[in-house]
Image (cartoon, rainbow, N blue to C red; front, top):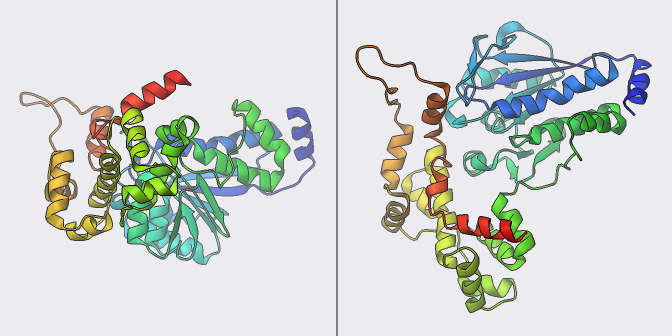
Length: 381
């Protein structure tokens, strides 16, 4: 099959499709690699330069990835290179990792009718320039709440990736590969895409309308569909929580049955689980937006700021005010070391320090009642 693909494309005279990757400080390497590799393999399998790509940074200097490693770009955004599409590669702490210089350059690209894309949290940068107003977009689930609150003209979706006219956005991890394979299929046919999948031992290209899902949700959907329905309703109704009787009625069970399901499979009450979801959302908003604590309390369904603060301190361990101050202060803790010459901080230490600003930091320890469920359902198949 690969030989047929190669022979077909040898007959096609085509100009390379020029792709520019704008690396934002603290970008994720996995997302970048997942975006570039399908292009490389398309060229390899066809023995043709179907795609060219260049890595760009704000000033042409090295860019630090979220794991502390540094990447040397091919140039800066001032180099006046011409692209068919520019893809913003985001990552950790996106709300403070980009600058107005990068936003202005992206706006210039849009004026030149260059297609714009984003992977992981890169959609936040496009939104900051008004470049997603009136568009549907996808972004990593961890920044969706802050993106939607900050940019209400953007229609955020929970889809793996979104193709909307001249915008192409997706979540992180390995999802960019699906988005790029979809693009390659539109430009050069499914035969080439299938050949690339064979090379990457990839069984399928996930469609754009497939949703981001957590491992817990996947297990619940197959093992406990009623519980999955209820948790989905809870997630969709954070600002105005639904009473437990109504939740039970919506899925066709009694409140008592609902409570038994939660106690048996999640080792907590429905109220406690719902509270966890609301506090998770509050933590995202505190760490990624400038919304006041009163506004965050209202957005997450708390009747008053004092009640919100009491719940937050009880389950998170610190108050919302302390959380906000810790994240938004510019102070950096000193790397470990002793004596006059401190040890050089390792990449892992730098990555951990950077991760302190992320809502998921320490999340495995936060109200971790779901851990027994994952183990139990995994064991039961």
